[in-house]
Length: 92
Image 1 (tube, rainbow, N blue to C red):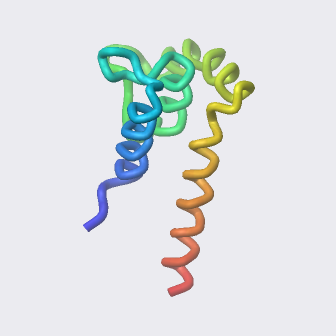
Image 2: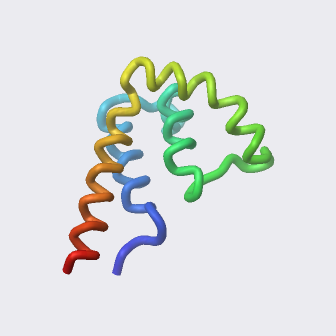
């Protein structure tokens, strides 16, 4: 059985961020990582009580800075791995 949508990737990413010390004391990712995390896993997570358009507008500048600093590397690598897995399954 596989987790729904990209929950496995989401949980692995959250654990990696924590392991690397890129989280706040409450367990949430630091602001730049959080903005990238929300953007990457937009279909899986949301911010309660805030419309999606507002969340995207507020996090867009932080995500841009995070990308400029190379913090989005983990998501590009995960996307490449997911595409490889899909190709492997389709080819089988």
